Structure formats: structure tokens, C-alpha cells
Length: 162
Image (cartoon, rainbow, N blue to C red; front, side, top):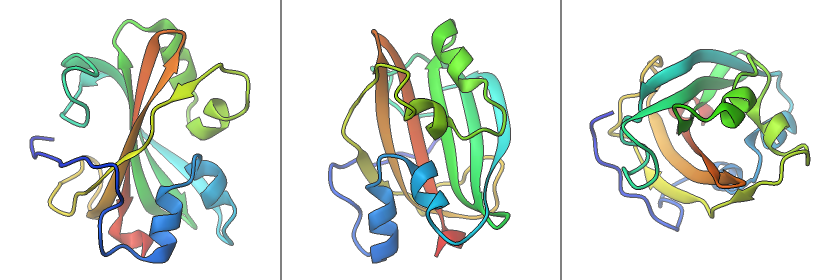
């Protein structure tokens, strides 16, 4: 991802009420599962990659360990998500290596002593996502801290969501 994103503390303007609500939920897994549609996760990538600009250099180095997935409702992708950690962070590698299990199940089951930063939001209709033909509408990001180790999570809400 080469394009610049303007991250803000406020939600982007012009979003539907449903999308505004969803973007503020702590766990997308729990929120999407609450709807009347079959929820699934499609694994796109797990392994070493470039950080690709979703987080600044102050957050993560140029090369990271990452997991990219599509969150789907009734088989249709509605969210593209990317999680990143330091390339040699064995603790986060183990958490991220969960196949098609939602990462939210691991992050929010109470077993990990996590601290999460507040969400940052941006409009990102100009961004082209890897692995997906649907355009993003908006995104959110946050960083989880686990005893000094960091995991960055960005979630892009796709136009097919609406």
C-alpha cells in the first residue's frame, strides 16, 4: 500500500448508522456474529511481509509478521483485516497462527492480559487492497500491547458491506 491515509480520532463523515455502529465495536467477530448471516473467515496470508504503510515506522519496522483475512457474511467479504507484529515475536506469531478461527476469539476470550489503544479511523475509498476486488469505504486501526509486545490491527470495511 503506497497511498497516504489520514488517521483521525473521529469516524469519517457520510457513513451509514449501521457502519458507524460496527466501526465502534470492540470485537468485529462478536458484532458480525450477532447479525442474521453466516459468519466466516477466509485466510489470505500468514507470514513475513512488508508493513505496507498501515502503521507508521514508529509503530512497526519495515518487515513484519502478518496475517491477512477477509471477514465474510453469507460468503460475501465485508471486512479486510491485517494484523502485524515484529518479525521475531514468537508470542504474537502463535496468537496469529489460528487458521480460519477469528482472531477476535483469541483476543477477547479473557486469557490474554491485553491493553488496546483507542481506535483511529479514516476514509479510504482511494486505497486498493491486496487480494480483494471490492473497494474499502473506511478503516479503523488500533494496537494491542501484551507485556510490551505489540500487535497492530487494521480493519477495512468494504463497499459490499452496505
